[in-house]
Length: 483
Image (cartoon, rainbow, N blue to C red; front, side, top):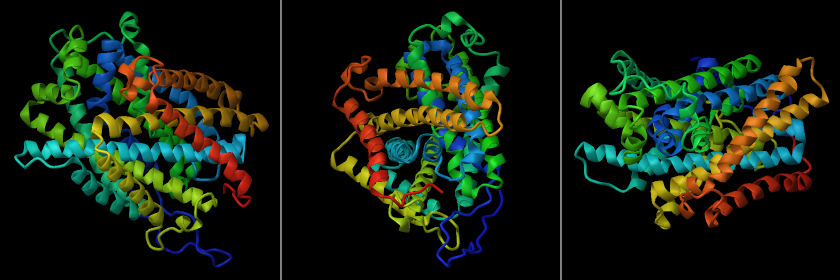
């Protein structure tokens, strides 16, 4: 990974430069984005849930569906990249296609969604680290103590050059991917599990069994973070080429990894019994299965890397949130002081500190309200994030189609409306599934479809208010502009 430029960026007016600096290549951005997806965390979390309450042995195929839909989305998203010069990601695309008000509204929805996810994952990280240390003989501690320790480390790394975070994420990501691939290889080498290799991934009757919609829901949530490639535009080498390549590579790698690894997990336990086994052992399915195939050492390694995977996920989203704050401040939506990069590191240092403070407030609030870190803090904030991100993906697809309707910029119909249109239809279906199953995500009213309670309505209200704030601010602040 290349080093960040540290020389001051010249300006014609003598005012401080408000552009981040760096020289991230395709590999660096892929590491950051894939780490945000938390591959090991997904295999140990959403995958057992998708198997147990979704479509059982057919669940791996849902990753194929999700990958295909998101690749259609990526065609329009990456085709528009050369015409969207800002590093504002979602809201820059929405601004180009639908106008200033919706663009700012999309920015606030994205900001709320990513902050919620960063803070919420601490609800998994704290208990996870606590449990890991307890298994090593250390005394039981409070989850929030470990969460705060993790927050300090994340905030420190976020303060420095993006290359520092990139190196940390690369090490953690390679370690967690290698252990899962080792497990996959052993399962294949041994000829599968008690019933051989699972055929559910190819069997239409298994793919549509159970609740395939719920399975697709957890599959699409496993990809959250891939779209953040565009947020690193200012820190990328040759962004018009780097961002599209990083987007496609991230999507394909994530999709293949999830499909193959979930298939291996099912094969290792036997597809006829997997639903029962997963239902009884949601939290320990991966570690227990790994211990059987890789021995006690493999089980212990999985425990350690599960915690570091969550840390990598938090760090990735911290970097994303910081850059959203920086970009919004640069465009005068938020206080302009947040858009001053660090003079030496070229990083969004002030925005990173602000992000750390916001997450700190959320963790302190959770402790003060005595929320359960997983059942309440994580699931509630995860609900906000899941609805918000899929909504933003769909809104971005509409914006890309609208952008190319104004002018096709010499591109083919495939890139300007066919592929984006297909992606939009798929994302609209995913959004429907998430809204239908939101009570299940929030563990509310027995999880019955459309059985909305206070928390479900609260999630929707927060996102609606965040989006509506965009047009209001655009009308009040006349100096807002997306650069």
